[in-house]
Image (tube, rainbow, N blue to C red):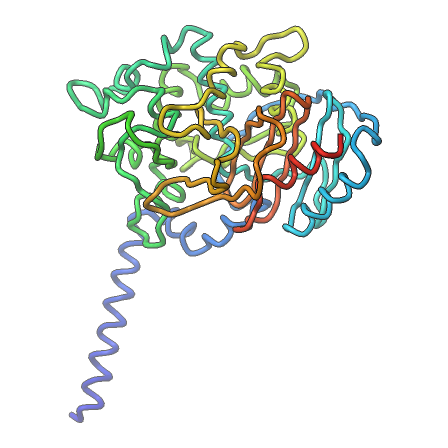
Length: 391
């Protein structure tokens, strides 16, 4: 047998072994690998059909009244629209004094178009935590998480992490960023079929309460604790406590598998108008009309700076960093940029990957919603400051 033929047979053998190994891996979790090979869809916030299975969050049909189109100077409106369009936005919606003064869509999208929110879901989770405390289901944000997650009880040091330390991204849990390899724990959290098991397997690496390290696992663990105490599906509690009273358009949460757990760190799929309703809830200190959905003291608590990061509260971003660079965590190196300080001192905002944003500016009675293609050069100062100058 010639050396060439022998090499050909060896190559064929390796190919067969690789195919067998790939098939074996696929069979361990076929849903994960189906998502894995189509994972570029995750970059498309409009690809809500790809994020399945999902559980509906029933809402309502409360209107956002149209306001005075001249409430903001026309040149400022034009500049805001120009920036949003240049950054491949799908939607820009602005409320001023509770009324719609800007609502624009691009790329064939419209008021009924649902989008993935990325990490903006975290801030909704923060509001739900306040509701659960108000309902007496959670005693205090300073409770140890082990009081609500039995797997971390019985002396497990992770059980001593407080709910506050999780919500302020100071848990001390090992950082697991979103990797590309199929064994990446961060990727398994995003695409896998056992998000709770993946989250609860994360080890403690540093003392809790000392350093700000933003990561999805903290919010997923909070979501597990919340789901355990409400004793009903997360989507139902979200609907009953927030979405229906708000009258917000219907939403959906992305489940890890049929009948499984929701991703509470991301992927609340709904319309730009729904996000305007949620932003207005924060603007109005947890109230809708005469109804107090979330205690005003809790909304204030969410917006208060945490010890390790003055630009982060409880699952809510706040203000602009002095050096203009907002770092999510030091190891992964992800950053967001602010070209100038905010013109209002009280800006807080929901932050989703690639420039998904809800800015809330109480002093200006303004809510700004931007949904669009994920971009790496989003400037957080442009929309708020442009529109503030236009008042």
